[in-house]
Image (cartoon, rainbow, N blue to C red; front, side, top):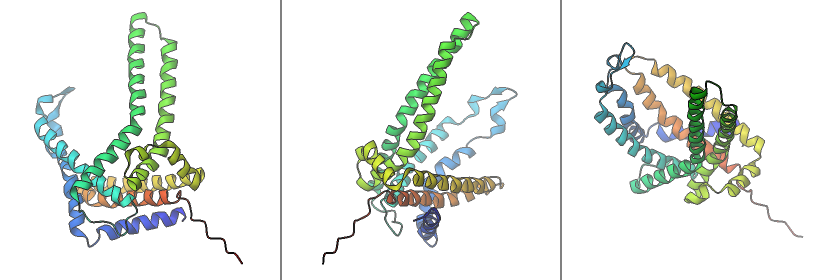
Length: 267
């Protein structure tokens, strides 16, 4: 299946999953609502006086409640995406709420395990940067060794980020297909999947998704600029892209699945 077919199939899948399924669409919007409402808990004009930030004007309690609700609800949405990534067609309903939540939590754990090395290297980079700043302040001369170490950590961070994107994406789908967190981070199996589809094909498919993401970002950016109702329009279109994304990478993963060998006919 070529990239055009994958994009077309994914968009059609998302369209059929939501159009006419208004209850399902409403659930997506409801679960995303808490995070969207945070922007209405305070007036940005009252937060800054000159160059001073008025921290007391921030309603921390309301923000904490909405953020907590949004965080919990996000696991149900993630769990739904896991079901799509399993290759279920047509799109499933919101049923088995406990399983949805558990799958969402497991998917989050898979991504945390992939991102953890990035966090560790970033923390090391911050520590080196602080040490370099303090050293410069004390000696009034730049510490070349610390600067080189910081540069090395930045390069490592970039390489790790690329690895996380390439391997973590397939790992997330692998977790959805197997239900195992361990399988979601098993590098050897993920590498086999990528090699089966071909590195060049995989990268092209990722580029296709990046283009789709840019188009989506432009659309939501235009919607966001519309006064009063822009945020509502963004809430409405977000489920389309979420389902599109899950379906697209499910199809990408299928490209790396071994094809059955036709039986040899004997005379």
